[in-house]
Every structure is written in structure tokens, then in C-alpha cells.
Amino acid sequence: GGCIYYGSSTLLKKLKIDDPLDASPVHGFCGAWGVIAAGLFAKKKYVLNDYGCVGGADHYGAFYGGGGKQFGNQVVGVLAIVAWVGFTSSLLFGALKVSGFLRVPVEEEEAGLDTSHYGGNAYNFDKELAVKA
Image (cartoon, rainbow, N blue to C red; front, side, top):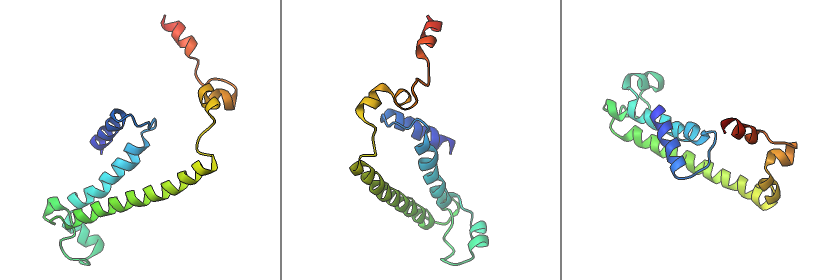
């Protein structure tokens, strides 16, 4: 999971995709990895213990001799989640854009939201620059 997080965070930075909180690497990429990993690493003993024999005896991790059936199911699940989230997000953000609530006015963006909404800057960069000089 740590490697997935680091790699996806680095990828987003190289693609210049703004995600200052790294929410996509943590929840999106690592979440997808968690779903897919079950199709690779699920032991037959635990799958049969939790789910019984329903669905056949080959519904466990590919690395434990289960073939690729469960792995394929997990990948289809991730694709379904991505499609659902993409669709519902498109509806929500499309409606916000059409109604004019998606972005702040250009003047406020250029002034900075701290200044326009709260009357001051959140950070005093002038003082920091004077200390470094």
C-alpha cells in the first residue's frame, strides 16, 4: 500500500494534477489496490471459511492457486466503482458549473480567498523572506 501511495502521488505531481491533500492516492489508488489485492492474495482456507463453497472452489487469490477468476472479478469491481464515481461526480460538478457555484469569481481568486473571505492572509510570507535574508 505504501508503494502504491508513493507511486500514485508522484505520478499526479508529474502530471501536474493538483491534489494538495493526496486524497486520490490515499483513497482512490490505495483503495483500488486493496480491492485488487484480494484477488491476488486471498487464501482458499479463509475464503471458504467466510463464504463457504458458493460460487465454486476457485474463488480465491491467484497467487494461491485460485487462477485468475477472482482477480478478474476484483478488477471488474474496481472498474465498476470508477464508472459509478465518474458518472455521479460528473452529474454533481456539471450541475454546480451550470448553476455558477463551481468557481469563485476571478477577482476573488486573484486576490486570494483568505483576503476576500476572511480579511487577511493566512501566511505572512514577507516576514519569512525577511528572516531568511
